[in-house]
Length: 467
Image 1 (cartoon, rainbow, N blue to C red):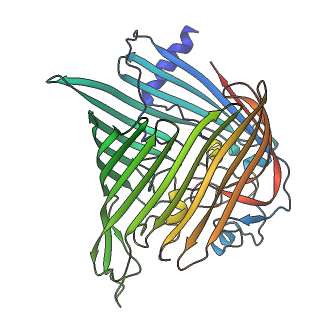
Image 2: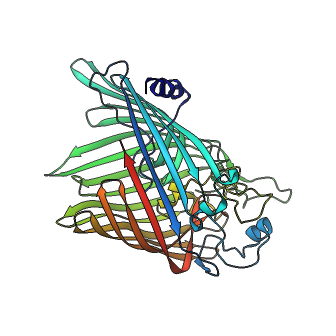
Image 3: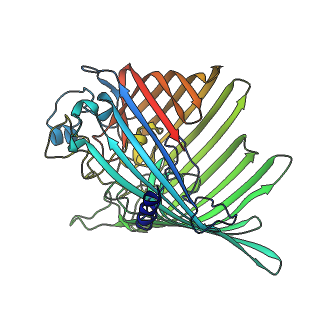
């Protein structure tokens, strides 16, 4: 065992991150709170978790909704298909993952958090099929401390590395997404200053930027009446300069460039029971842009709670992005399959769609940015889960995720994902569930997303959470 611990300590400086639960629609900005109690020099906390997902055979089942159906020319030419059947993916074959995490907590206020995840992406592909097996690392370095100046406490928090399932600010742009970058916060009483940098949205997810930086000044958790508290934030955006392709002259010189921008957001919370939030964003326009709209709006509410034998968690939002707010934020040349091979047994490409990402809600920024030069893109959404405890660890679960994507000059769509399951959870994070669902992994887009089955399939899921 001593040799094993030394191996962990040797690996940790290279960096790995303990992932948040992929089903958790987190509202963090990638900063993990660190325990500040004194620790010994050898304080290492280990954790092991994993899961298995399998969907019943779906030959002949067609999609009723997808960002781009398989008959889309771009997908058809890429993979040589001409039908609307859902393509081969890991869940048809029984896919498993195992995550080993370690926290190094030897200095108060300082934490190095790491993860190594291994995936076998299909039993029926074969035990040793290396085309569908992968091991990948994540890391997060966090400093959480405070100093006292003239009797006033000044808090400081810094994190560098991977943030899993992050939501930055209120989620106008970055939400339901894995990011790498650096995040800093300095706070005094209700006042806070933010620096948030997201690196590379070009290669592993098709958002088309090299670096995106946000700066913010905020008032947080200002008490009002009873359990009510409020907050507000003003932010500056630096997402790089993007040409607006819709405004060019006869020689194809760009007449307009989109750069920078600002955001203004507000929150109202009722303890930890419910929260309401709103964000308005505006991009900067340089040059002759004509009659374009560089604004964006997010209105939302979320609630989580428990009442007797019922437990729930949900979110409702309305989003609208003006034509030039999202201008340039797309890269279609991201692949989650090997483009030199066909569909079958081809689940790992230059980029990876991790198995746990499938468990997240459908909606993300890339759903809107893929509609370039199509006018405004908007729509409502509602998503959540309700659990009903039957007896002991036996429970019923209803999951729902639905909304509209309204495109001003393009094809508008609606989606309605669901899962109805019966599960047994003897301890938190460990259990088995049988569910009927219409969700399917979509490895054919330029970002990790879902197909919607025309008919439900049976999904078997196993989850374990050890030491």
